[in-house]
Amino acid sequence: MRKTISLFIPLLLFLSGCPDNHGHGGHDHGAESHGGGGDVVVPGTYGEAVTKIEERSQRIEALIREDKLSEVHAVAADIKKIAEELPRLAKAGLPAEALREVNVKATELAGMFGEIDAAADAGKKEETVAVHDRMKALIAVLRTHADASHGGAPGGEQPAPEGAHGTDEEAGHGGHDH
Image (cartoon, rainbow, N blue to C red; front, side, top):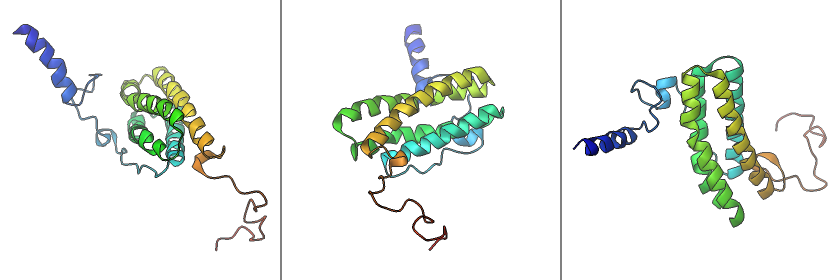
């Protein structure tokens, strides 16, 4: 009976949404419990999604620099949500040989949410920086696949054709909107 109970408790914790049990005192892990976030709209292409992850990563870096660790949760939740969709988005534009690495790295990135959340919630700045550095390394790998699939243009954009005007001013538009 004791053995059954000892196996049941970790399973119950896992199913209740707290597999890592990192000291949240039993509160919900949703973004609402940390002041919003997690409601990011996942872009429609792999390249755009990686760009949005990079933007959120830069926000985490700023929050760490500003000693606002309590705000890291919501931004990290956005990264997790987008990273979970990367394998699906990659299928539409990446070669088969790249899909395996994208699946592994995106899954690993999404899985780091609990680790950065725990470090930030505990106020451990150095640990938060270390986790974020590992996240940035994964994001860099994901970026290489976005660049490779779109001729090297960041953000999933196609490069301008040769002879095309680069800016509105160069095209004689004076930089104004039409």
